[in-house]
Length: 248
Image (cartoon, rainbow, N blue to C red; front, side, top):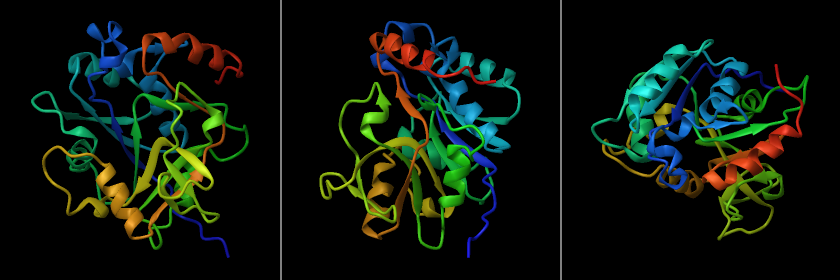
């Protein structure tokens, strides 16, 4: 029997990084606002959340925070709350914990503002809708979107995890069978971070905790995954995007 899970209605978007590798562009703007094919990177992420039925998203800000706040205030279709890290960057784990204080205790998506995908199959559930359906809190601490390394643009060429037939993940270095890349989006219950530090830390600590418990799972992304780490990577990303039909 197929279990119909409740849709995920809230999200945390990590957008506070300094974007140092994108200099000199990020000398005057935050990396999430750098346009890729005429669209700010973060809008690809926000659009995917909106299309999946998310209603409220927290976005953390630090670098050119005022620019971020202005852009986010103008974005339509999501209630966006700001988690302000102007005073101190919290790394990705600390940023999530701080942002969770602005959300309720129901399941959330966590996404990176500079990692996105294109080319989802029309008529099918979106990647995030599929991830929400896949995530089973009875068996999983976290469920990640993953992608085959050959279906990426701009990636560093390193696999992150090995995936079992049922989707269970282990670090690639420990299990190089069926290698996959983490696509920058996961679902989890906020309670998994109840024992987390209150200061800055890397969320990889909790990836490893979930692996040790046999409760880190992944499901494969539909479409093509893009990361833009340097100004030199922009033309390649835009050439890939140009090969796909324009989305409404």
